[in-house]
Image 1 (tube, helix red, strand yellow):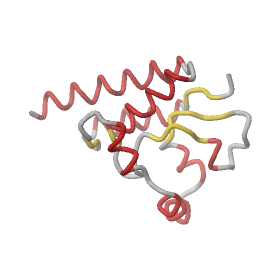
Image 2 (cartoon, one colour):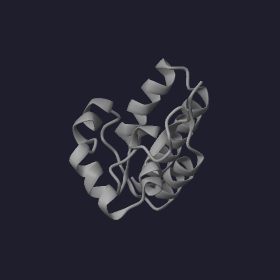
Image 3 (cartoon, one colour):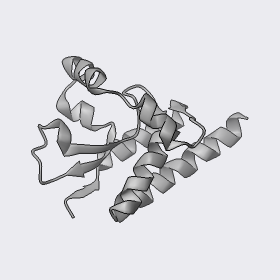
Image 4 (cartoon, one colour):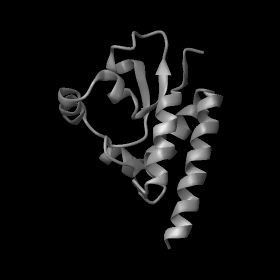
Length: 122
């Protein structure tokens, strides 16, 4: 398998949840598709950040592609500011469909953390 868990991104996602920097988009990955940063947003982010900082927003990494390429990083979970629960559900679908078991397990854990935080905030 060429795509596996980006441990650094996973740790960042957990920190964002601890800091309440997450957005609940009704558990619908379809809404995330509308909110997912487009190429312009990605290019704007890369003007002020390194490719490795960019990679912290993606739970999957493809080792078949050079880590200095944006497509090395896959399965986004946020908008370069906040984690989006809908993005986690979209990434979970993809991880499940392509049998990325390590990523799937990590995403399930992140969703659980978000839901526990949600319960405390309400």
